Length: 273
Image 1 (cartoon, rainbow, N blue to C red):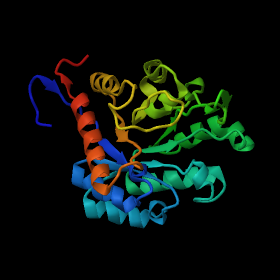
Image 2 (tube, helix red, strand yellow):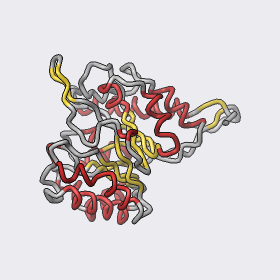
Image 3 (spheres, rainbow, N blue to C red):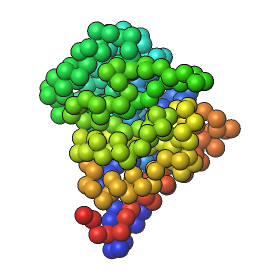
Image 4 (cartoon, rainbow, N blue to C red):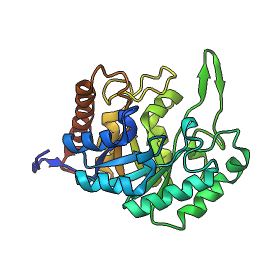
């Protein structure tokens, strides 16, 4: 977006999560991010071998002249065997990848409740690891799992990460929608420990939808304007679901729309408090 004296355009980088092209490959995400004009990429470490290979990721970054701004540790059910079955080994390897690739953040989910030992040690362990590196361990808000009228607390210490004293947080707006909470109240609790944003929309249906921003009920625009006005120094990452795109061209159009929405709402009137 061109500079204008009436606008304040922050230096916040807008990245594309490689999860946004799932089930397409990590390489496809880099190609699209470069083509559409994203500032960088967040690598979701998953079953794609390229996402697990530092040298391969560096080659993609160099080939597309696109920095890797964050690494998402393999914390999902489908990545239980990626980079070891030991959760602490996964985080050590994620930190090493971030350091070697020049990424400033590692995104990590709280443990599943059945990971009992890991859950007991998690808050203290994350605090210790955060003190050993300049990379920010940004713990991400999750949500209760629901089935019909039942609700299961799947994460420990809990899905609301603001209940704990983590150094840094990731706010995920789709997860906030699934939780049916007040997103801005959570952002306020995070305060200056908010280090990373996963931007996506949600309708509050109870499903983790990761809609294109502007297509749901989350205050995506208002949050971006808030970040621009308050000196946010982290990254905004588009982590959206394009699995229902009817074609590669439609997926590309969706990712272009998401980027345009984000850049538009990061530009605010020039008076910054």
